[in-house]
Image (tube, rainbow, N blue to C red; front, top):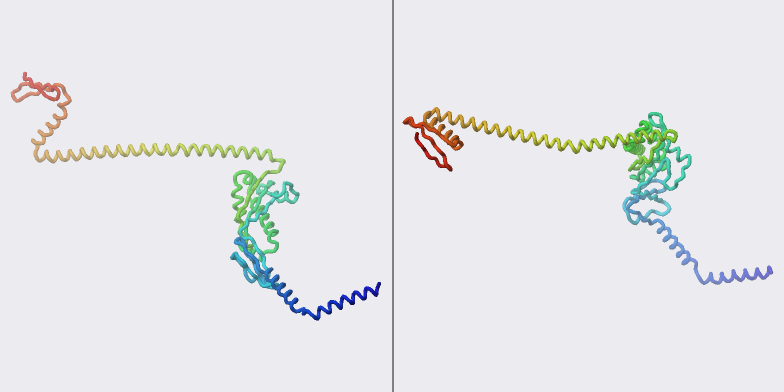
Length: 329
């Protein structure tokens, strides 16, 4: 059996030796080398999306950041790339996790905070952010998400600790969110984190279960107060414009009447001055003219007129339909 095996192996070796004399190994090696070069080159081409940046390092040292979208190439083995999505909004949640309804003790602890009046509050909240500088985000801070989570939680607890419990439970949530956002962005800028805080959301804020009922009653009373204030403000806004319009109308009417009386008085004074000037120049003529003008105004209003003529007779006028008849006694 062993002899047969040796014969077969020997024959197998002789078989390949014969073919080795006929064919050269160089073309095969060249083909393999070309294939390897193609594979290596292809693996170092990559596509960069419009929402991405690629941070390129040469032997571990940052050399450039690719920001324009399109097909890119890097040197095989010597260069490495890290793609970063700079448009996507990232989210960190505290006190809850949106992907699961159950909460671990560690997650629950994230929501427990102490207020300035030494009360405990249970507040679920979230922070949204996006990367604005991929190089700073990757190289300036180690463990980016862990570091940001720690900074954010510390900032939120500090801001909440500067407000009383009522502010968090009622109408100061937006103020607290704004303070956290501004303070957190300032810290990130200081450490050149390379991120922008887009929003801070205070989801739910509740007192501990032991005092929840009492605080809910207080919150309800404050909401009723706010509703009443809003109703009164609405009533005020409805009535004030009407009252102001009426007052303005009365003032305008009074000013118009005042101006009218001033004009009449001014006209009368001017007329009197004119008559006085004429009278001073021609007293008899002016006197007669004034008399006649007065008679022209008075006579149409009377039914009977008695006139004493130059002879001493009484003349009686009877106006009939605009005409006059005269009788002498």
